[in-house]
Each structure stands twice: as C-alpha cells, then as structure tokens.
Length: 144
Ligand code: FES
Image 1 (cartoon, rainbow, N blue to C red):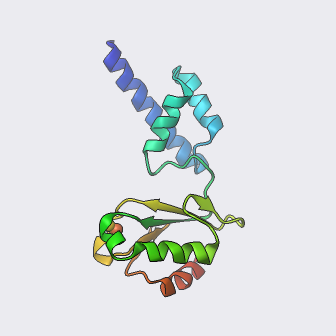
Image 2 (cartoon, protein in one colour):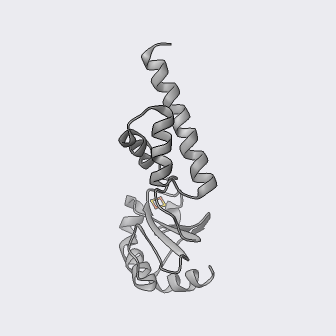
C-alpha cells in the first residue's frame, strides 16, 4: 500500500475512533487522545489537531444541556452579541465554559441553518429563533 493510501486509511480509522469516543463518553479526553495516538502510532498533536477540527467533538466534559449560539454573519447582524451577553449574565459563564452545577455548557458555533430566524441558537437539538434577551431566561428555565 502506498504512503498516501496508508495515510488516508489511518485518518479514517482515527476519525471513527474520535466519533466513537464522543458518542460513548460524551467528549474526547486527553487520555483518549493519547490512547488513539499510541494505537495508530501517530503523534498526540496530530490526533488532537484532527479532534479539534470537528465541531461535533468536545475535548472536555459538557453539561447536561449544550447551548450553541450561532456567530455567523446573518445572526451577527441581528445582534447575536446581545444574546451572547444575556446568556453570560443569566448563567455566569462565557463561551467554552460549563456551569458549576453541570446543567449547561455554552458554545459559539457557525450557522445552524436557522438564518431566517436570526438571531438563533440550539439547545441540545432544539432550535430557538428570533431571540431577545428577555426570551433567554424563559427558554433556559425549561431545561432542568
Ligand atoms: S447565520 Fe445564524 S443560523 Fe444561519
């Protein structure tokens, strides 16, 4: 097998390992990254690089609910910044963080396909659109 084919095969195995870990553990820990690097004889930095490219992969444990605010241009133009601030104030966390009680993690993401309802966010798999700071606490209250 040529070097290129070998690399493509390794990448494919790595990606399915990363996906599997994300699905079963809910995130991909440093220990899991080292384990994958060892089993595929790849440098840890390469595995970490691949894991962090994909937005569905988290490298730290997430809360029970994950809030993802769209930061792409159409939402940005509809004042997504104000929504980000409202979440920060309501939950006392910034993007990339999880509340102390493990209830919510908060992340920024690219377009979630709800541009017609900008500004929009996802809580887990549910889309919430036409957001206002007032709506935020009401929406968050409905997640325990
Ligand atoms: S730009 Fe925000 S949902 Fe598409």
